[in-house]
Length: 455
Ligand code: PMP
Image 1: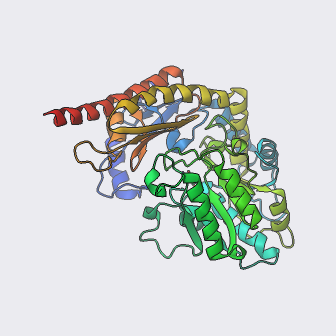
Image 2: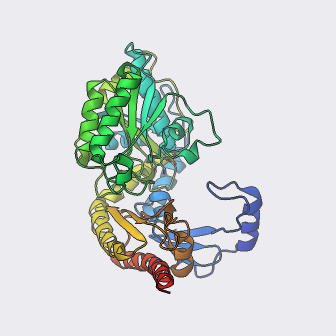
Image 3: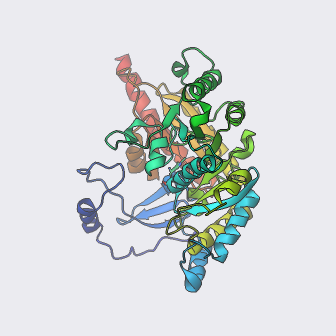
């Protein structure tokens, strides 16, 4: 492992923070917050900030960085392509070799027969493209009234107009209305929250709700359903094995298309190239981004099944594209990134180190403040229960700053779970450090509450 620059670059960290506070709008940060971490360098799973402090990255940025930070191969792939042709449009008849090779590679890896790839700059743009294609598919086949989109509560699909509408967390809708119309959110199966299903089996509840919704809206008005195969931001929620096959069967019976949003779960994160491989369903669209380039450059890719691709490319073709669709540099980096995932067998690594980290964290289920630890490959959620002092659901918001402060380990949270998604190259030793850091903070909090109770 290379040491970080012995002499930190000449950066006045405090001045940068001050400028940041007055100049930048950060996602999800109150304007009066003075907290900033100016990240300046990365190597493997390690990061260093402008104050010279080191961290262990247990979130891979925002659930990506599959091959780790600072990889020479990716820097060279970008530099090589940029020195030849950094960018050109892929509108109309223009194209470039890296995007063609990448499309070919994605089709090879695809979980179900897919024919074509549509490139975007990220996940939410690919979600929007899938929604547009789904509607266009029906329109061109003589069913223009099929515009409704079925999505799910607790699903996250980004914050573009369509992505945000499909996202099933109210905070992304409030104050931003009116949202894209004709979207209905359904309940996903979350067996550890039986209160959502009024005593019914979660899968049966969800299937009944889907059947009733199709009946209420009318199948002839529904274009598509979108869902994450494993809920990510909601806290690593795997569905019961029969859920997706039964959903697919019902949708197919009514001519409704299926989009699987694999922005988090693709390219090794869960120990497979795609989650759909394990679901036993063939979707019409697979949405990917994040791990496609490990985040080195922005890129998303929408994989489209044969029968849909045939329709949306006919006549005048698919109307609409992004300036950066098929960006040659981004595609060249993605090709090399996927080659590293394969060469270093990071699918096996994700299962191995993820399993190790998950087992260490699962011990925390003994704590009264920890409900369930859920792990699939390198996606882990430590869900908190109730605050023993107040009986209220225990927010997980306080955990990441404390773990970072105490142990220099970066984790994230959703409202009530601590989320971990390290680079797939994390070592067992690093995973042990991550587990110990989380355990330390949660154990202390649980002990404090127990002691207070005993008094
Ligand atoms: N879908 C899922 C499942 C995601 O997790 C995300 C990002 N967290 C998105 C879509 C949106 O991707 P992007 O932020 O690249 O637009």
